[in-house]
Image (tube, rainbow, N blue to C red):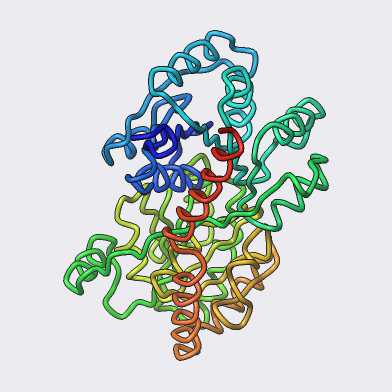
Length: 374
């Protein structure tokens, strides 16, 4: 086989091990590449969900701890890994991996794709802004939404021409059988007649769960047979449970922790809600749409690029509990509208936000970078 036709090795470098949306994207990409053209390898800074999930999917995975951008020991170990695995291209994700990966990639003459998934903290200090400008001149920088691209241009000072937008994608979820769904209802202790509203996401301040909880009493006044499920874990778990207890909602709110059966949870829902204060491009929304669920989301980040107001769901301002309550009541009242939103959302997700669409888009980008560097 000629050098041009050999299977190319793509090394995915991740700042975080998750769980989370960015980590899900990385795991799916690494495991879904066309085996006739590419093989995926993963390197993470610390062990965790992404490492375990990737290993279980047969992706060679390495953990190289780092002390930050000036950690020369990490750079040497990472350089050795690139040589050992005969890496042709690095695909780094988020700030630390993008910057540290770029430094070694430049030294070895390996092309780099640098994906930015969210706004986080990378723009707040001049040193970080300068680092990202430096990366953008030496790599193909990807933003996961048009909103995030505008943010990077305006707040960081990266030229618009240096940023490509590639949307995240999700696979079509397996459809649970009715007996499995009923077993899940019993496990969570839901009554057979309950309407179910759900949110999937880590219990972090940026996800805005507290504003959804504040909306629940108003919803229950209209529809007292509604239950709310929160799938995810995180630093706010204790505080959110205390908020629920203060509002006297204990019998109507269920915290499920980290779940490995999200398709089964989504199958229970009448409405999916994501009350985030900031988003790049939400994998949770895409999964809910792919499962045929109507969506209520905040008008932040890339959410309006996914959710079409009045067609696949409702968009509300962030931190607006009354608006969340009003939208929930509207969908719980009009089941035909909720069903229509869900069907429209599923078609939209399958058409524009599928896993295969995302994988194909990134592979085309890899092809382009490898041609340029060859």
